Amino acid sequence: MNKNTNNLDNLSEKTDFVIRFAGEGGQGLVTSADALARAATSAGYYTQTFSTFPSQIMGGPASSQVRISTSPVLSSGDGVDVLVALNKFSYDNHYQDLVDGGVTIYNAEEYSLPDGGQYFGIKADELAKSTGNARAANMVTIGAVASLINFSLEEVDNFIRKRFTRGRDGDEEIIKANISAVRLGVEVANLSGFSVGELAPASKSDGDQIMVTGNIALSLGATAAGLNYYVGYPISPATTILVWMENNLVGENKFAYQVSSEIEAISAIVGAGYSGKKAMTATAGPGISLMSEGLGLAWMSEIPVVVVDVQRGGPATGLPTKSEQSDLFTCLHPAHGDVKMPILAPGTVEECFYAGALAVNWAERYQGPVIIMSEMALSDRGENIPKPDLASIKNETRNVYEGKNGFKRYQTWDGSGDLTPMPIPGGAGAYVANGSEHDEIGDTTHLPKHHIRLTERRFNKLKLLGEAHYEIENENADIIISPWGSSKGPAREAYERLRRNNRNVGWVYTVALHPMPDVVLDALKTAKRVIVPELNYQGQWSTLLRQDGVNAESITKYDGTPFRPGELVESIKVKLK
Image (cartoon, one colour):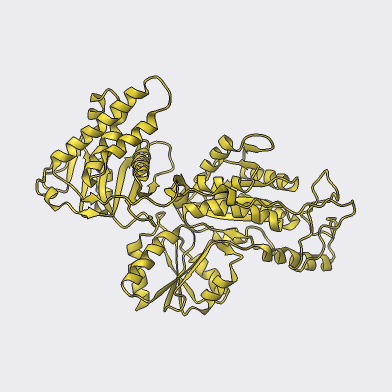
C-alpha cells in the first residue's frame, strides 16, 4: 500500500467528481457504479452513469463510471478523479484518464504496483469474506471511494438499507454485512492518506427526482401516451425495452411479446397498427435494415407504428455494445422510393421520456410510421431527472371513421383541414391497406394520377407534426453549435465553457430532425457557420443540413465512445480561428 500522509492536508471542496470502475465483464462494475449513483441521488446530488463493455456475456475489458455533481450533469466528463482498477490490464488502459491529483484503488489480490504513485491497494474479496458476506466486495470499494471524496457514509448506509430491505428472512444480516464492508473500505482508504477533495454539500432540487435509464424512460413515455402493443426481437442495445415491456405492458387490451426475427417484429406491429392498436418495436441498426420493406409498407398504406432504433457501431454486426450516430441516412430513407420518415432523436434521458410519448402521438395523428433514434450512450445511461407528470402527457388517438361503407380513405389531401379518418377492420368503411399504389378506396392501380396525388398526400401529412423540444441561443454568433442525439450533453458543456471564455458561439438544437421546426431551420439557414458534433465518419447530419441550404460542417468521432467536452472545446477553438 502506498501511503501519502500529506494528501489530506490539501483537502478542498469540489462540486464534481467522476469515479470509474474498470475490469472485466461480470465483475460487478455496473452494479458498483449504479449503487454509488443511487446513493448520491438519494442524497440530493445530480448523477450520470456511463458503461462500456464487450459483446460477450462474461469477460473482456469493461468499465462503468458515475459522475456526481451539485448541478445537473451534461456529460460523462473529461477525466477521472478516482479509478478502481480490478486487474492490471484495466489499470494500464485507464490510468491516463486520471486528472491531476486523481487516485487509483487497485486490486491487491490480483497485482501490485511500485511504491510512490497516486494509488493504493485493497483486498476487497478478503475483506468482504470477513463480514460473513463474500458478495459484499463491491461495498468495500464503495467505502474506499466514499472516503476519498468525503461522501456521507450515512447516505451510503441509507442506500444499503433501502436496497436490501425486501421482506425476506436474513435481510438484516445482509444489511449489517454490507455496512461493515463499507467501513472496512473506509478504513483502508483512510490509512492510505489519500483524498481527491471533499464533495460539496448537495442542494436539493425542486420537486421529486427519479433515477432512470434512457431505454426505460423511453418505454415509460410511450406507455404514458397509450401504447398498448409491443413486439420485439432481442438485440443490443435495445433489449432492455423488450424486457421492460414484457414486465410492465400487461393487463386488459395490452400485449407484449418476443418474436423470432426483426422481420416478424415489423410485420406484427404493422398488422397491429392496421387493426387499431398503438404499436411499437425497438431494434438496432441491423434490425432497421431488415425492417426496410415493412416500414415502406407502413408509409405507403398509412398505418401508425413506432420503431425505435437504439444505434450502435456498424455496419453489419459492427460494435454491438458501443455508441454511434451512423444510422441517420438509413432511418430517414429506410425504404426505396420517395420516403422520408419522421425522426425524433432525444439527447438526454429526460428527452427520451417525452420522445417516447410524442412518437406514439405523432404516429396516431398523421397515420403513419415514426422512428425514434436513440443510441447506446443513452440506452443504459442512468440519470436522475425530474419526475414526469404523467397527467400532462397527451394521449392522442387517430381519427377513426364511423360512417357508412363506401368511404374513400385515400382521398387527395393538401395539408389543410382535417386528415381523412382511418377505418378499423370490423368497423364501418372497411378498406384494403395496400402496399401497391392504390386508388381512393385502397384497390391497386397503376394510373399515374393516383401515384402523383398520393405521393403528395403522404408528404403533406408531415405538416401535422410539431411541438418537439428545441433550443435556440445567440443565433447571431460567428459559429453555431448544433449537435443531435446524445452528443447534445458534451456539446452543451463545451458551449457553456466557450461562452464563459467570451467566445462568440451560439446554440441551436432540436429533438425533431424531420420534420424540423421552421424556426430551427430558419436559424440554421441564416447562420454564418454551423458546427455539428456527431458520432459518425461521414458527417451525416451536416450533409443533410447542407441539402437544406445550411452552411454546416461536422466534428466527427467514430471510436465507439461519446465526445468529451474538452476535446470539443479545442476543436471548436480551431474553427473559430
